[in-house]
Amino acid sequence: MYIIQFIRGFCMALADSVPGVSGGTIAFLLGFYDQFISSIDDLIRGSLEKKKEALFFLVKLGIGWACGMILAVLILTSVFESHIYAISSMFIGFILFAIPIVVKEEKETLLSHTGSAFFVVIGAAVVCAITYFNPVSGGSSMNLEHLNVQLGIYVFAAGAVAISAMVLPGISGSTLLLIMGIYLPVINAIKDILHFDYSAFPTVFIFGCGVLIGIFSVVKIIRRALERFRAQTIYLIVGLMLGSIYAVIKGPETLEVPQAAMSFGTFQILFFLIGGLVIVGMQMLKGSREGI
Image 1 (tube, rainbow, N blue to C red):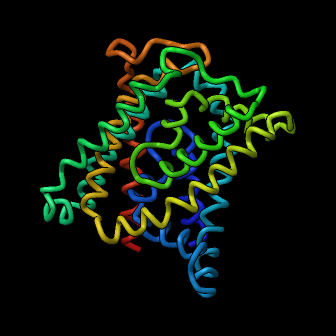
Image 2 (image 1 turned 60 degrees about the vertical axis):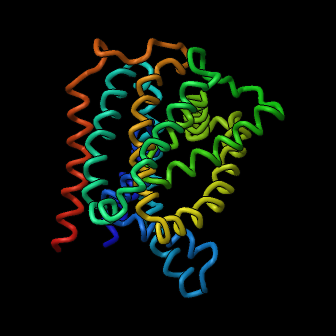
């Protein structure tokens, strides 16, 4: 059981570290999302017994997550900009292969509330609007080397927003960071810390505070939404995932050295299929676990 939780956390971290599919989506695909959200909520607000159970589960998951995130950060910045179109093609594969699985998992709930399908449009519209009106798009990533109060507030808010997306099965928090122009600066800051260069510590600390506030604020909302308005929430999630395709396509424009948005000419089918195979493999892992 320990190794299963480690693998789950590891896979979530790989998803969280790159724009495309959120760690929440991975948890959903592997069949432990409700347990994940409930454990975080119980750790914050539950009884002493529930806190112990939640902590035990989250520590096992967290060890795998930490290992996956460290590995991703150490190798990610060296390949992200130089292979942006290949990586973006893989992200789109993640998303497009994940959506049918999400729909299949929640088929009965969705079919019993078809009148709520308009939430798909709302979800997609929100992500597309954020991407389209993002002031950093068409420009460069933000320079976080010299933090001031305004930049600090922005980094804090970005952390809160990103973690909210990371725990929601839909748009990736890293995609939102990419949209907001601080994805690579934050990844580079974390990488510097891992290499014992603490000049980026203020950036990581402020971002981390935003993450903590965000997760404390959003988990209870997500848990209640899934309990009381599950169909509407799932439809919204599907919409967020569809909208995130547009965000990934526009992602190259927010790099430190901006590149053209992805086109049919720069789309790479091989990496798209690799992304799809990863999602299918995760679904098979869930199936094999259920068969034990």
